[in-house]
Length: 377
Image 1 (tube, rainbow, N blue to C red):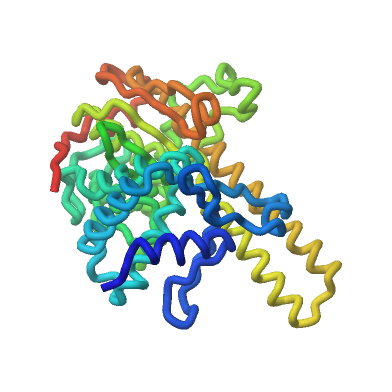
Image 2: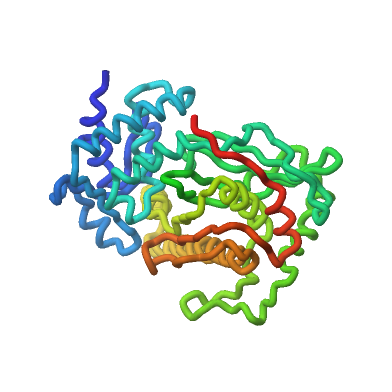
C-alpha cells in the first residue's frame, strides 16, 4: 500500500514548489501547480528565485500548523474521493497525487493559510448534496421565455472546481437552450459558488430557438435604470455589463438555497494556482519555441502580449462575475452583498434572507419556480 503522507510531503509539495507536478507514469500527466509549503512556521519547500523574481506569479504558501490534524484530513479526503471518483483513475499512486494536486487549484489565498478548514470544506462538498436528479427535471413553465425550465445536478470531472454542478436549460418543442453551468458546493451552512461557465454547444443545436431565447433574455434589463447604476470608484464599470444568461441559473440556485435555509453565499474571486498554471504554460511554450531557434526578441514580444491578454481576461472574468451578483442584489429584496473582494477577504460575501419580491419580471418568475430540498448522502 502507498504511504500517502510520504507522497504528499516528499512528492506533491516538493514538486509544487517548482510549478510542475507529475501525476502519471513516465511524466505523461503533468499539472502546472505552484505553491510553497511551511510546516510549523518553517519552510519545507520554497519556490526558486527565478519563479519569485518573474513578477507575474502570485505564489501562495501552504501553512500546515497542525500536521496530525492535517494528515487526518488528507486521509479522510483520500478515501472519500476514491469512492466518489472511483472510475476515473486506476493507479492508486497516480490517483492520490492527482486529487491532492488538483485540490489546491481551487484554493484562494485564505485557504492556503487554513488548509484543514479548506479540506474539510471539500469533504462537505461531496457529502452535502441538493436533492436534484442527475437527469433533467422540469421545474415549471416560464411565460416570459415561453419555455419549460429544467435543471439537473451532475457529478463533475475531477479537474473541475466542485464535485457537483447545476445544469439549467429551457425547452420548447424538442429544442433546448443551455444556460451557463454553476459549479458550487455546500459546507457549514454556506454555499460556495466557484464558477458560472458556458458549456459546450450541443450536437442538436437549434439556431432559431437559440436566437429566440437570446432575444428574450434582454428582459433581464426590464426595470433597470442604468443611468443611476454606475459603480463606485473602486469598480468603475456600469452594471449593464452583465451576462444575461448567467443570471438565470444563479437566480434559480439562490431560490433553491433560500428554501433550504442556506443564507450565506461565498464567491471566491481569485484562485492563484489556476492563474499561475496559465502563466507556467507560457514559459513551457516559450522554451519549446526557443529550441526551434525562434528569435528571442520576437518571442519576448509574443509572450508579453500573451501575458497581457491573460491578465485582461482574468480581470474581465472577475469584473463580470462581480457585476452579475451586484445585478441580482439590485433586483431582489433578499439578496444583499455584504463585502466585495479584498474588503473582508478575497471573496464576495452575500447574505440571503427570506424572499418577498423582485423588480424584474423574468427573474421574479424564475425565482418562484423552484422548490428543492437538501439531503445528505
